[in-house]
Amino acid sequence: MNIYYSPLKKIKLLNPEYPNKSTGIINGKSSGLLNWNDIAYPQMYDLYQTLLSNFWKAQEINMQDDIKQWDQLSSTEQDVFLRINTQLASLDSLQTPTMTQVMDYVTDSSFKAIFAVIAQQEAVHNESYSYILSSLVPVSEQKARFNQAKKDPIVQKRNQLILDAYEQFKEKPAPQHLFQLAVNSINLEGIYFYAGFAFFYHLARQQKMLKTSTMISYIQRDEMQHAYFIAQFIRILLTENPDLNNAKNIEYVNHAIAQAVELEKEWASYILRDIKGIDLKEYEFYTEYLANKRLRQMGLDNLFAERSNPMPWIHVFSDEMMNGTKSDFFEQKSRTYAKVTQSNGFDEL
Ligand code: ZN
Ligand code: ZN
Image (cartoon, rainbow, N blue to C red):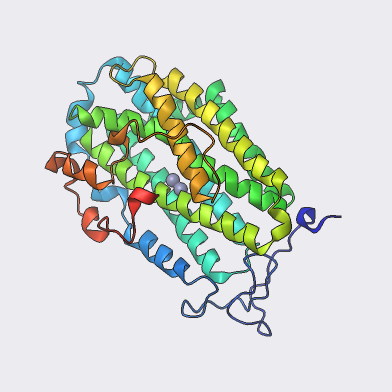
């Protein structure tokens, strides 16, 4: 059988006869000890540091203002707010255990550490959606909304693309399936969240529910970093395993991203259809713009017509947006943890 379809073995915790610096991200020889000063890809330490400097937790954000504003939202706004909240939570729920599972098969300890941090951040994201919900609606409604997210056919359809790749790796953790899992992680982290983000920022543009938007902006900052890391992971995986770097897999990436774009457009036109002020055609272009960006991060060509960001107000962490934002939008302390600089270059994420 082709080695790329034969299952990876769960890695032993300690292999003292092997070097500490792994000889590969998968199927490598690695002692299991992590010395950050002796790793195969030193840039991973910067990435790890950036992830840590983004640290935040939901309880840092006082929801009092949003609680006061909640009753002033229209019933449509409230409904969409709750649907999106639980839909985003359902995406993050998949991501925590998946990132943890990948750690069992990745031989490079520095990558394992980064997957661990990502898993922790996904757990915080998941919690923050519950935190927002618990501030605004009684527990009976929270439960109903989570059940609604599980049953929604459009949510199910879009999640299926991700789930299929994740389950495939779970059933058979082969290198090819790890590659496919990573591509779909980019779909989840880098494309699927954005119709939801757009809605919350749209409210924020009207000075509504700013605490929720602040939390969403922290989540977005994390997700951008995750998508960037996973794109780097894919590039290294393909470089180290040239047989994975074949025309069929490049086609796989293009096809999977194109599918995610279609599903995201479908979801956006369904969930945002009654929200005045969000131009759905423009959002479709935005989705394509995002997809191109993800492809370029993976070292591939644009799949869609090249265009500048059609909805720059979704991209909160670009310098332009910061300057153009009312100062009370981001008063929380987390910004002092990690300022946007040339070197961490959020604009590139
Ligand atoms: Zn997340
Ligand atoms: Zn993420």
